[in-house]
Length: 123
View (cartoon, rainbow, N blue to C red):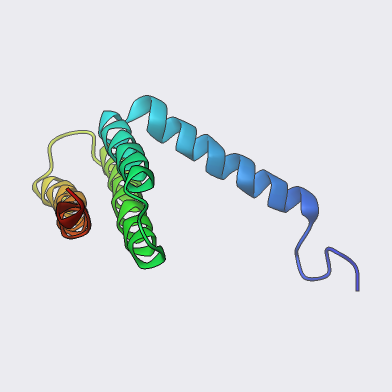
């Protein structure tokens, strides 16, 4: 069986990673809220290292950090598509963008709650 018989090639996999990293670079350079969440995540990791979190605590911190960052990426992607499809004000697009912002807010609140549950006893 050849490497392309399943539609899989090493070059395609490399390109997929290049596109993904390009997307992360775009998020970091063009989305201020992503940078805020990223640096909050970095601070949390440093704090976790200082307080020597256990395995379960690291798993929870990692999941909520991922949840927030992925939510911010979804929010940005949907906002860009919405702005492209309807550059002028549109009530439905506005509601959609508000819902996406709410998604990020919920993810961030959940992350803060998990962080407080883990870190308050350590202070």
